[in-house]
Amino acid sequence: MRVYLGLAAKRPEDGIPNAMLHTVRGAIDAAFPVPPEAIRAREWHRPGISLFAWTNEPDDSRQPPLLVAGHDRVTGVNGHLAVPGEVDRLAGMPGLGTEAVGGCFSVFRATGRELSAATAIHRVCPVYHAETPDVHVVGSRALLVHLAARGEMVEWDVLALQSMIRQGYFLSDETPYRGVSALPPSSSITIAGGSRTITETPLPAAAPAPASRRQKKAFVEELADALLATVEPLRAAGEPVNLALTGGRDSRLVAALLHAARIPLRATTNGLDDHPDVVIAGQISRALRIEHTVIPPVRAEKKDAILVEHPLVRTYETLRTCEGMTSAYESIVGYLPYNARPTMSGQSGEVLRAGTFLLLQTDLGDKALSRRVEATFLRDPALFGEAANEHARELARPWLERTGLEALDHMYVSYRIGRWQAASRAGSLRRGDPIWPFLDNRVVRAALGLDQTWRLSEEVIHDLIGMFAPSLRDIPIEGKPWRFTVGRRYYPWQRRPQTLTAPKTGAGWNWRTGPGEALTAVLREHVLDHLDLLAPIVDPDEVRRLFAEPVLKKPTQAWHLYTVATMLAGAYPGKAPEGLDPIRVPVPS
Image (cartoon, rainbow, N blue to C red; front, side):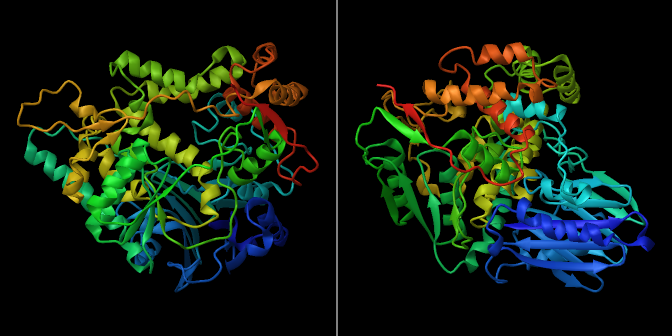
C-alpha cells in the first residue's frame, strides 16, 4: 500500500509552515493502517511545494518506485500501471490526463512551480483535497489530508454522514471530515501560483447497441485488447498467479484471460466436492490444463452459539482502515505483512455487466429507473430528519435529471466503485497490490462505451470468455442462466448454455444479520447513548423504534448507526479499545 500527501503554499514566497510539515510527519501513524515499524517514507521539497510518500512495501523492487524523480519534478503512483514505464508519460502530461493510461491508479506530481494529482475513470484509488488560509492539501488518505489542514483536532461533517447511515458508504464527493472532498472520477487538481484548478472529464457515453455480428465482434475485440494489456505486469511475477475460481461468470473470465495471455496460473476453490462451484471450477481447470486445489470447509462441531468480537473492536478497526467511509457491517480484510505474491479473483466483474444497480433492476422503464435512483439516495426517509432528507434529495437531483440507463451505470462507477470499493479495499491493499483487470482504467472506459442493455444481457462477457478460451464455451455456469439466453429460441442443432445450481439447504445464517438478543443489546445501548450526536441527522424517535424489539429486524441499518455513533463519539482516531469481552450470539437451530 502506498500513501501520498502534497502541500502547496497559496503564497509560494512564504513557503509551507514548518509546523505543518511537522504535523504531517506525526500524523502518518494514525492515517496509515499498518504497524508504524512497517512504514518507509520519502519526501521531496521545493520552496512552497512538498510531496510526501509512504509505503509498507518491504523494499524498492516494485515498479514504478515510490517516487520517480526527474528534472525538478517528482511523480508518485498510487496503485499499479499496466506498463510501469508509463509513469514518465503521466509525469509529462499537461493537466495529468489519464485517459490513455492502463492500470488501476491515481497519480501525484510536484514540480518546482506546481502540485497536481489525478484520478482514473473510477477513482477507486482516490484523491482527497482540502485547503487552509495558507496552503492547499491533496492526498490519498482523507484523514491525513484533514489532519494536515486542521492539526490534531478532527472536525466531522455531520450532515454528510447521512449517506453512511443509509447505505454504509458515500453517495457523493463528501467525506466524514469537514472541508475534505474526494476528487471526482477522471479528474485532475492542479495548484499553481497559489491558485487551485479542478478539471473534470465526463464519463464516456455508450454507443448504440451493435446492429450486426461484425459490429459486436469489433466491440468485443476492443475490450479484449484492453483486458489483455492489464495482465502484462504478471509476466515478471516469477511464479503462477493464484486465482480464486468459482463456477460463476467473472472468475471464469479471469481464468480465460490469463490463459489467452499465456500467464501461468493455478486455481483454488473453497467448498465441498459436490458443490457446483467446485464441480465447475474443476471442469474449467481441466479444460485449461491448470492445477486446481479444493479447500473444504472446516467441519466444526455443532454449536448452539458462537463468540464474536465486541462491536466496538470491530468498528474501530473498520474506521481505522477505511477512514469512516465504510460501515462496520462490512467484513474488512485484516492486516498481514505486505506480500508481492500474485493473486487474482473475479471481483468487480459487474462493471462489464452494467453494474450492480442495473443488475438489480427487472423493469428498465424510465419511471422504474428513477425509483431506483431515489431509493438509493433516499433509503428509509422516515428514519432521518428533514435536513438529512433534503441533503439527500439535492445529491440525487443531478442523477434524476438524466434519462435512460446511463444514470445508474455511471452511479455504479462513481459511487459503488469510486467510494465503497475505494474505501473497503484498503484492508486488502495493506497485504499487497493485486492486479484488478476489471478495474483497469482502459477496460472500464471501453466497457462504459458499450450499450448498457447489451452489457446487461451478459452476452459481452460470454463472448469474451469464448474468445479467450474456446474450450470453456460449453462448460455450465453456477446459478442463474446467462441473461441473453432467457426467452431465446434455440433450434435442435444449437446448444443452449447450461447451468448448475446448488440445492437450497437452509444454510447461510450470518451473525451480523442474525445478531440475537445479546448483540442487539450492545448495539442498542451504544447507539441510544450517543443519540444526541446523531440527532442532527436522524429522527431520535425512529431510531428508538428501530431498536425496540429484543432482536433487530433491520440489523444492517443498526450497524451503520453504530459505526457513525462511534465516529462522532471520538473513538477514532485514537487508541484502540481494550478489555472488551466477545459477545455470545446464538446459532439458529
